[in-house]
Length: 174
Image (cartoon, rainbow, N blue to C red):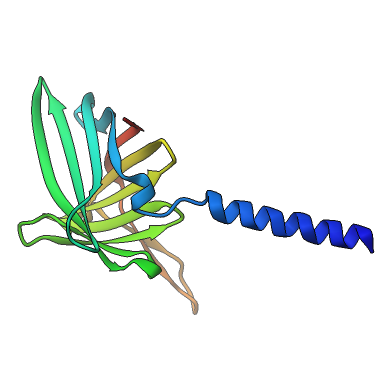
């Protein structure tokens, strides 16, 4: 019986510690992240400096969300906002402040977004850690789709889209 009580105490203690140590999105990830963005595409490889800014604003449910690309000393700032659509369900919107709104889904401290522009399908993944984040974009062209499948009574068609460009960065919180 003592062993059972000890086990229950340890489980309860672990659960309490896990809850107090868990990070809350987005507030626990506010800050400026910096690093190198590695770009690989059909033209070769390129590395540029990158920053990601995630900060609070004066509006409830609205957060500053800015991407900065630095090439040859020139800063290209993309000032967006992250809007809470339904934070309890991990549903957000990236507002590019020009009429473009991108759905985003938060699952386990990772923000996913997929969208199409000019026949290209882009998938964005932003994985947040306590003091860093991983940023990745993959790009495919929907006109280059490959269709395969099975035959027979249970025939199914599968469409795949070859990735032709990848952007990856591991950014450190400043």
